[in-house]
Length: 429
Image 1 (cartoon, rainbow, N blue to C red):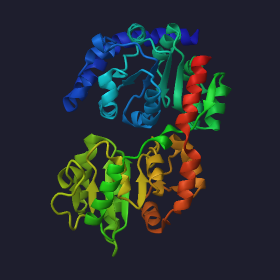
Image 2: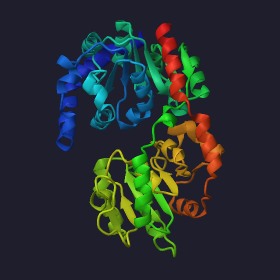
Image 3: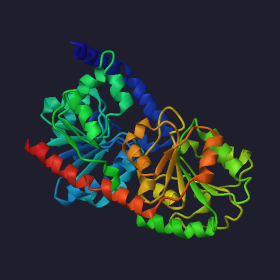
Image 4: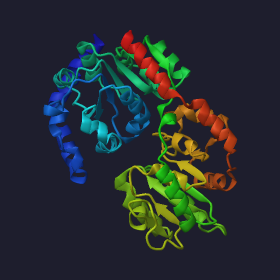
């Protein structure tokens, strides 16, 4: 009864708030025109783009798209036809870049995910008729779940996790999200702990498959470019990369960088803000703090070669998207952003894959797996969110043992194969 009432109110909310959603897209479209391109797809009108597929994968944004890259490639290699849905332009652009040939041949179709209204999903399932749906991480919406059930499409969370904070919150009050999760067909999750949480709420068909990001390909061209550039802009200096820094921790990072430049052997910093709209703001803050700044956009060519001189530079601001492996490969040590705000730390897997030890802040609940395992292995560390504490750990952080890092990565690889096997079981079941 509670869930039915919620779904009724949810339906009414979409009717009244849809104009606001469209205004939001148009406002975002003023900065990124891709937000307003193919707008009809958000209402599930696809025209000639629609074609029957075997598997639907929902990767809301850039991070989810990259995490699923190896899985999508494996599915394509065995002949599956895929429809890949996104909400953000960054995710869609990445899929267009990675799967250009498959999109051209029609084996993969990349479109916007429909607005979360029942009639939109009816059109979506009528257009593509997938045998199974996989939604990355915990990106679930009410009408997505119930429309899939009505269409007879088993919908699974893929690469999923039920975080402690979310799990405890969902068990209180009206338990609306917990009630919705129970109506999924099942889940492919990152660890046995997350599997037990899903099973504890009554969800069947739960498979502990691991973390897909450990199987993602490392772009060799970015790593090689980083090796060459490092010799030119930071020769003989320790390099610290601040990856995915978010608003709310910028003052902390700028303070730490300014303090570090007063040292006799000051490290070179690479600062990569998570949001593109913060690129210029971060550069301005650093300059006001007396730090010499170079931007990737003006210092490096399109193929990541140095143009001009970068002598006496203290910080390289990474004002680009899709080049995180380059920025990480430059470093000796990585500070992962987000962890110095209550919203929680961002992904630590990419630096670990490159053999880089990781520091983040006190808020690690968003990356329980694999941060706990990496911390126990001595490869990652959570520190207090103060400039004194962070500066101290930058000075004292030991180099990771290469063998330990390699062993850790090997232990957590193989998720794609396990997920493929779980998909086959789900379809057969």
